[in-house]
Amino acid sequence: MKKLLTALIAVTALAVPAAASAHHGHGRHHAALLARVAGTGASLANPSAPVSGSIARSEKLGTGTFAATVTTDWTKAVTRTGPHGTLACAPSTAALTLTGATVSNTLHSTLTGKTCKWTPTGGTTTTAFFGRGTATGAGALASLTGMTAKAWLVQKSDGSVKGAVFAGSREHRSLSLFAVGERRAKHAAGCDH
Image 1 (cartoon, rainbow, N blue to C red):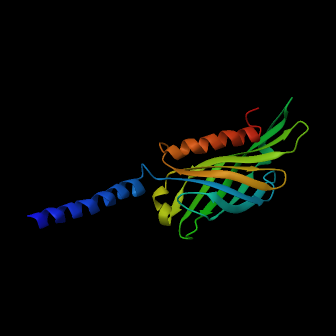
Image 2 (cartoon, helix red, strand yellow; image 1 turned 180 degrees about the vertical axis):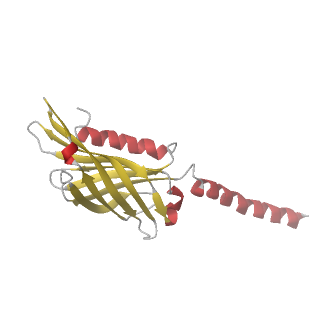
Image 3 (cartoon, rainbow, N blue to C red; image 1 turned 90 degrees about the vertical axis):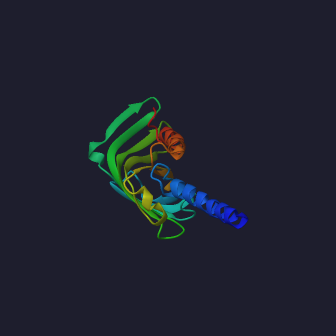
């Protein structure tokens, strides 16, 4: 009887973490990715701008790379000039790829949104892309396929780019962290003026 009880406890101890891991790691409700990116590229003020660099922080991907090509239709730009400077925003799309430290772990998305060019009075121009789309994941990110993908990229006048990418469930806490960074990015790009 003692041997049977010990065996049942051992089996239960092995089964519970596996079930919890399966629910947390592979359940669509809990699936999410938040990655901070940094790099350089062509000016986002161009009609087509490839940018690339590294993943600065991501729990799911570790170190890795990102690449995006932002295409903006500046012929449809809306420009406003005020006491703080000039803001021009135009519809744009971005083809985005994140590749993890393990190269089979990838995320792809075509994002639709806008690119804004902010030139403050007496300052240097900052350009930013903000967009959303649908994620296609592979490897460890396969569970994100079909979920929402969002990204923002801010480029300074020296060509340096910083940004963040979110993919996953709208209920996931990582989305609120992404939103905080997005608000700061919109401020830097003059979108809140």
